[in-house]
Length: 154
Image (cartoon, rainbow, N blue to C red; front, side, top):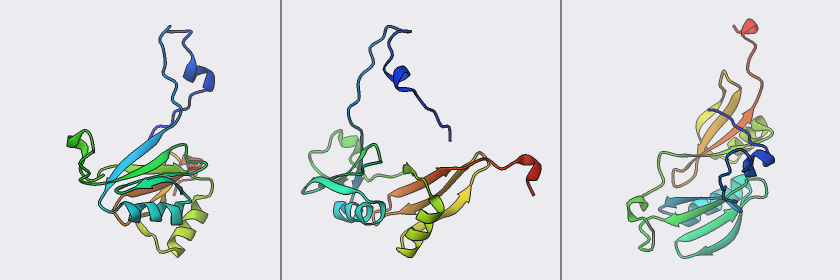
């Protein structure tokens, strides 16, 4: 996984290219799930999200540090467009970087969350684990730690 950072000046800068850059004011990820309430309740209980708005087959949630809203839509909604993307959310990870991965891992295990990938640390310094909500959506918590020193590797 590659980490990139952009400084605020660079993000809105048009000096070098003269091109116009859109100004994004909010971000959201929308996931199609069979049971909207199950996923919405799960992220509220285990990840600290709060409901912003809801209707039949729809729920939008926010978190003060997430930087985006999570939106759940019930699969099969006739109003969903494009229809070609109306199927179940699959093949993606919802990833959040956290400050104390080991404490979060211990807490979520205690809460009996379904851990689908136990905690591990990649050689490049990504410490993570993955869990599934009741609809099978996979959430990954990550903490960036120092990569291991190759001279001290076993």
